[in-house]
Length: 184
Image (cartoon, rainbow, N blue to C red; front, side, top):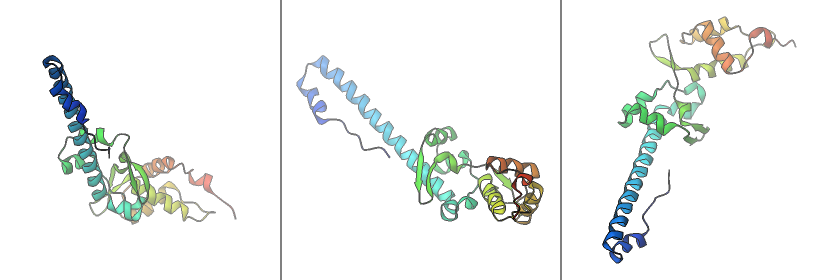
């Protein structure tokens, strides 16, 4: 949130003390300054509304971590806030949200989705967190294959192909099962 801006009173008072031509020039600059301040306040207000809408939609993530991440696209936030999707895109670029779970770029909260067995949706971030947890809990001598991971996710109601599991595993920089074998 930006600091509150205001026009220096001395410039506003100067309009009454100078020639007509100079006063006209100063009034024009003061009007431009007021317009700039209003624009910045409006932008600040939009950023705050977008942040609040993100927090409301991603409360599970903030409370439970990556597995609680919900699928969310900019269009949904735009509808919540009452602005165009391109406005949401602009105000979320290079903006960060400080949370109890850490500081995240606004864009972190937007995630594609995968269908679930019950007709719902799971975010790709939540699915990646589940894959990581399953791999962290696997038996070192018998690591889970991408196919087995897909089967375990299916048992949890998340319908993903083996190829999708492989893609998410690679994004997490986790090697394939044959490279994870650890003999004890």
